[in-house]
Amino acid sequence: MPVLVAYATKYGATRGIAEHVARELTDAGHPAETLPAATVTDLSGYTAVIVGSAVFAGRWHRDARDFVRRHGAQLRERPVWLFSSGPLGTATHDKAGKDLVETSQPLAIAKLVEATGARGTAVFFGALDTARLDRAGRLVMRVPAARDVMVEGDFRDWPAIAAWARGVASELSATRG
Image (cartoon, rainbow, N blue to C red):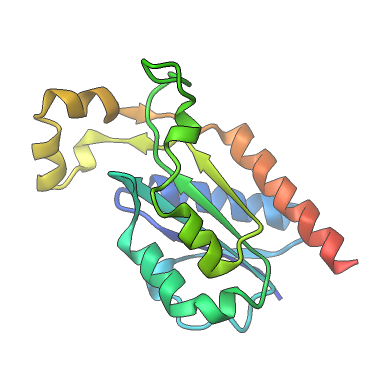
């Protein structure tokens, strides 16, 4: 049975990460498919699940939170991993010297881990194409402080994403054997 990589995205960057994770898993011998979290109705056909979400204002996308709520019991019956897509830019630390990956953990990540029984979590840098912003996003970009954190560009670290996915594949292989 395949691995499901369910994702919730607002502008598409998280979908790209989910697809990359699925390719790495498939290449490592664990066939995987990606689906928008909002479209998934049943997990019985999957051996494991990875749930990924864009993070805005410290929160997972509503579709990902709803997915966890809907499928909590089924998620706790199989191996689960979670990833978040959020920080933007090339800096690895904020002005206070704090690691951006650590400070970009979603506010409720501990609750999501508890609800799913997740074996691990990851935060990946994301991407922002301001041409794809909706009206609310364009309004936010008018606030000077928002422009400091909403940096346009693609900051996804493909080698780091691939390495994380290969680690998941390795754990899946260990539980299989």
